[in-house]
Every structure is written in C-alpha cells, then in structure tokens.
Amino acid sequence: QVQLVESGGGLVQPGGSLRLSCGASGIIFSSYAMGWYRQAPGKQRELVASLTSGGNTNYPDSVKGRFTISRDNTKNTVYLQMNSLKPEDTAVYYCNARLVLGSITTSDYWGQGTQVTVSS
Image (cartoon, rainbow, N blue to C red; front, side, top):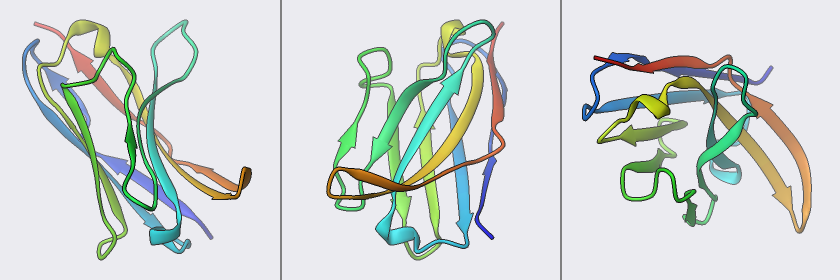
C-alpha cells in the first residue's frame, strides 16, 4: 500500500519560512519523480516544484528563487523549503510521486495535503 504523508504546514507571517516534508512508503522512492502542488480555494491545483529521480528540478516563475525542493532517498522523504512567503502562497500543499517510463506515466500517487496559511 502506497502512502505519502505530508507535514510541516501551518500559519506563518508574510516574509517567513516553512519547510514541508513528505514521507513515502510502499514505493521504490529513488525511482520516482517527486513533486509539490498546491490548490487555493476556487483555483486549480498547480505545480509548485518538481524533482526527478535524476535530480533535475523545475519551478514556476511564481516561486522560483523562493522555494527549493530536495529529497533524501535514504529516508524516502521529499522536502519543500519555502522562504519569503507571500499571502498568495496560501493553499493546501500536496505531495506527488510519479513513475515515468519513457514518456508514459505508469504510477501516480498523492498525499492528503497540508494547509499553509500566510497571514499577518
């Protein structure tokens, strides 16, 4: 049984920092591309950061330079360091694990989400 469990969300003031963690079980973690997505009320879920099994990262312009994704394959855990947080970063943040073979996604798993609220 595959499980992705996020932690680290909470309330933070604008300009503050948070680090999200996502522990994975039931998968060969090192083979998976890992990602963080977020969904604000009334908006579509959007990619925040991704990290391939080979170490390549991708960020949208909205978080580039502020957010950093990393992984520890020995702990089956992916992290999202979020700095200089803005009120518009408020959302539920989801962890994603995806196995891609060639150009085909063969497995796709999601965590339950963790709330991040940026407010003074």
